[in-house]
Image (cartoon, rainbow over all chains, first blue to last red; front, side, top):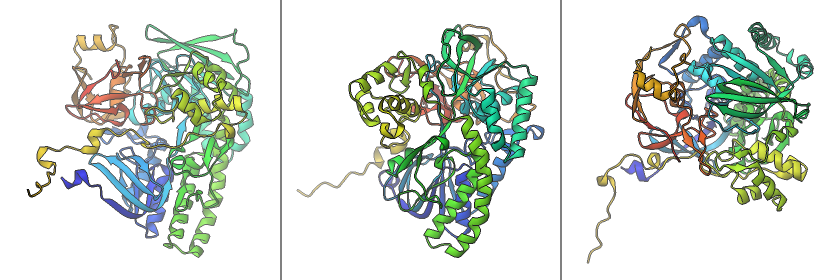
Length: 484
Length: 114
């Protein structure tokens, strides 16, 4: 009973938010140095989205285990064999300025008061809207990878794969390898964009080779590839998606709107790159900078991954997109910096250990940066957001309403939110922030002037039933009557 | 693999003939246990542990809820707990279907905001 109405706050040296490659590395290194560490993740096991595990009840057959599956298993084992306390299926819905992390899990609420906090909440997928993007059957590229990797389910009978970056090739290849059909690939990047990325990709020849073999699979399957094209419209006609595409220039501007082609499928998997997740750092009012080569807004950090808030460290893609390999080093450095600042690790030991990490980080980051260039934001792609297109899915806010508000004088993102309700829904603006910021930036001059939404709790919606738990009348405390 | 009766298949594919299952065949992965859950009053067999949004999807339930203002159909979109477009009612609680896993006897209702 007491469990329901009181909410014990447990003290701990370090809380790590997110059990992807960066979070696991940070938690493990800090715990090895002797710190008491709690790691929290919404998923059922470690690995993040990149190494997302299949359900326990699924047994992948040996010959079909991918490199990613094996790497994920490795990380899950590292965590299992460590002293880190892992809380899975726990949603973090608040982080306060005195570093109290509030979660809701299978057993209700729990709170952790951290001396230090490492935020390793990764990235979100940017999807620039177009008419029809809200039709069921239009899904993210990241969602498609989860379907393929962790669920062994095809995104459609015949899928159109669109957008940019490594995920585009990974999804198309994943569908073919799983025995499915890709009806077309619509790539924002032209052939010359890929050629330009090539030298940097050579920093990880093993990964470049893997990417090329995926590409060869796609070519072998005879899939039509439209390079330098964007999806401009999607209509549903009897369970079939009729997808209009048009050529674009490198800034994302539609070159010839009359010369549109149509491709068809029952699923459209689309994604325009990844951007760092800043919801928690915004909530904590940390300083941020806008850096397109890091994927967008990133919290300001020093060389040891300290944010502008004392005791708060950032690791992995949340510091700027550079991929899963570099996330491990970012996590290790942040984890060691945190325990050094807690005086659990000596400065000397820290300095000695950090050297080798920095060398590997640089190499892996170079590879990651090439991938980021292939999914960099193209500001003029917002042309595909016509005035009748819904931009904010949660609150059904149309482009015309956004434009009208800007016309009437809304000059920053928060004002735009107050006037139109954009970004005010249950997703807290995670799905539409990139598009709305870009629309506003095109009018006010820059992303810096457009600003960011103020971070708000709850970070994730919390059902009231999960807060109050299961109780009966007997559980409700009735104070004794006052003496007459 | 599935014991759907004709009526169920008919309903879930919107009156169209059943197509090949989107679940990749068993030589890649063995789904060890199947169970029954109730989706909008229909009993559906599904692998234990599968993401509920995926179960709904492979059974042809693409529309999971309706949007708040103009009430247009919406389905799962991000599949990682971010976008909140796959909200359904699971045993009486509104939850994103991408964060719920198939368990025996779960009762699911779709169509919020209809």
